Image (tube, rainbow, N blue to C red):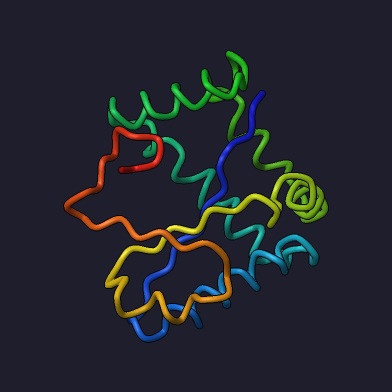
Length: 144
């Protein structure tokens, strides 16, 4: 199996972009270093287990799930056993997998908004590329 994706999203005012990004990165580090509280884990599992049937109800959504199963070679019974497997996940499991799979070594951060108003805030974080909406090409690997 190849690597998958991990992503987080947030909405914020333009002037708070750096602050929001730092909070998000801090949360990811906590996710990799501390066990998730039992009540948060249970709430997340309950939501995912309960909403799963709705997530495959529409043909397009089912096709997306099946594509993921195929691309990542998750096995023929992946969707059938999803809820049962999810119910057995422990806080220790989450921490172990987060440590194994989530790394800050090879990160791509995508920010959408008024780039001319927030790029100066981001100086020092690494290479910054701006793709104007008029040049955005979703069919290209580099989006241009």
